[in-house]
Image (cartoon, rainbow, N blue to C red; front, side, top):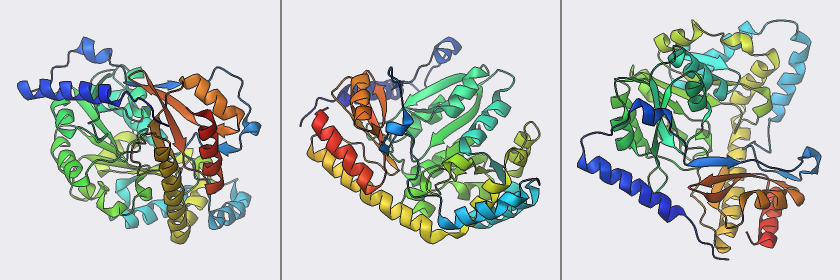
Length: 387
């Protein structure tokens, strides 16, 4: 099946932006313009009654269908009897393990109930006086941006390039004296795309001298060589870079809510001086995270299965004429020709849960990578829909 995609319009508008950059030394953002900034991507919400029990393939939340690992289950189960105690000692143990893994000292680590919580806490601390702006790509994961805007900050979005990577040059030019935070999600959500690590490292190193740069690496572990893509080494070089990781994705602990950031001790202190740190974590989550970090074979197995199922689904979609954005994550984004709400309802009626967005008014489906059985159901359903 062949479909007409609105990507050309998106790329054209992006090139027009690049043209404007080329003829001027900088990008001009007024407070009025930036305060009215709206993302090119919008989520399409269902207008029908949703019954979770009818879902046969839950492919809407980028969850790991294989986790948590058996070792995590064992650790969590055995920790229930100590649920009457605070988990400060376990938090200290986990922080030490993470610090050793990331090559920093423990004072560079902050834990939180998921990386989204840490994104929001960082935004809260940076923008609590209602001033300044945040620079990010568009589309991007919006948690930190929405929090900043709700506090009174301005958002300065910079469209992704035609290959869906971050336009680092335009982002650098968007940074000004009022910029309180620069946000980069790599690999990016919701596109699943990636930005070259060498270029990103140079960008973070330079821009962090003007403003803290928050790099969200929630999906990093799905890459074949995550060590070469992470920005955590810049923290060791004393750069004002904040790197976020989560146990919600490849670790399969989304419902247990735990994640961490790596940053300069002064930056960590600037956050913990304003908001609670490990008090938001329970013993079960901490014990589970400790066990999961040690179960590297399970994590590798999850990555291999994810890649196999993602390759299968993307190949099938390409064969049907869909232009899937190359993904390095546990989800894929691609345009559809059917109206978004109708597509979502038809998929749901067959027991398949997905997400639908519009980009420049073109409907897109974002599908999480499930088990092979779930992806086979997804493929057969979309074939029958002819969307």
